[in-house]
Image (cartoon, rainbow, N blue to C red; front, side, top):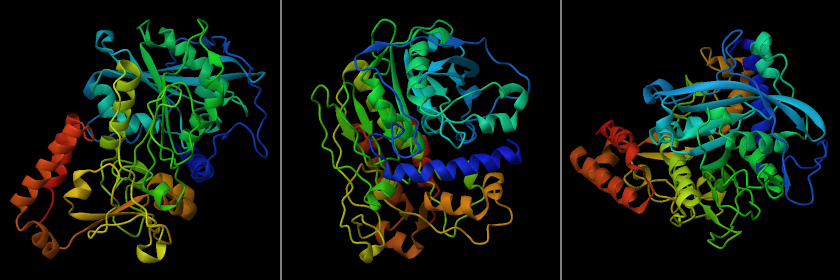
Length: 458
């Protein structure tokens, strides 16, 4: 990505990430300056848009997954990514957008399940980044739909993307039309689609929530539902009732900022809902994000494996919509709402980590304190990533304010808590297996999680 495009991406990120911290169920459907969206009053079949042949040039495809875990790219799982342009009419105006399909090279390995997302305004398919190891290990496909301004695409590669066109108020109908197209299997080379869920994080979770009124009325040409479930993450808004399961994953930022719903879990048809708060998880991934390398913040960034636990929620949602398997219920992170006590509205334990929530070995057998919102180094570090460098202090402040920290315990505290590293490793391993049995950790990530324990220094 060139410097102009990076700078634009930073601007879009600043504009788009802050707003979701105060989202309502009507995000993108009204409000000052919003383009009015006219939805039908009764269930209505969408028109299928027109899809191009695979786009092979000119120039390279815009890379919306720069932060995949090291060594875990598409080729490692025998996956491929194909880009298409899709055009139609939404909210009374023409559009031309981009669709990226990530699927097994061997069609016979396809599970029939799809993770769909609206591309985040920063230029990333974050939900695929956060769950890619799980998605590709399971044979699922992932589709990414552009619903925001294509300006950063054009800035990077005008020859390839100059004809893209998306206007205000079109996002929901684009998601419906392109989603209905995906369900035909055509963008997957004719593979049969069994179930498809729509996911999002932060800004793209806002796009998802804004889509929910449209979900109630838009249908495929066969008058079937387009999406079978929803997965908003890094978001604490009250999610309105819909007729499909919802798994909702806020983070410590939403809990600490009191931007958090207290909606109860439900298995009742039309109200199927789970709220999962993972103790130790920050608003953004600070382990693999290229935007945070090198670290522009004044404290060490968290290596908490965002991917391993976002994948837990996706797994439970897919099992729910595909097999009817009810997900487990989770505790909420405990709150004392006293920022004067420890700088957090969360109730913290003797190690400084949150009480309650979905437990992980990182907070149950800890070697560090996990926090949020470190300050940015000022002035910006001279060797900052291209992304932060292009956005300057504003980008650094934003990214650090959404980040998580990991403050290691002193060796004396480690020895006090565990005596020896061997004893620590034994307790950690035992807790990993207990959490796997309870459904809060996927065996797929055991090697990664235990690898982190092996790095602990006594």
